[in-house]
Image: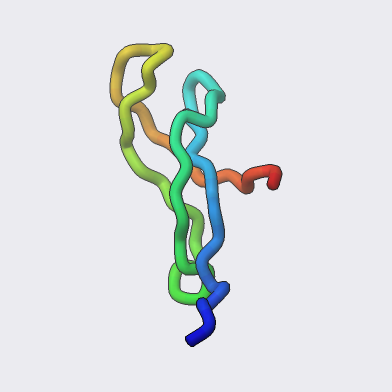
Length: 57
């Protein structure tokens, strides 16, 4: 069986420091809105909101 190419690679960018700290994949057909997750920012050493950004690849 062939792989379904509906999953896209995205980065999670810290809203306070501006660093892309995490990468993940999401199904672009079922999840059309942008992800917004509270994750740990190593530069600031605290939990902040990370928003989805498109990766260059």
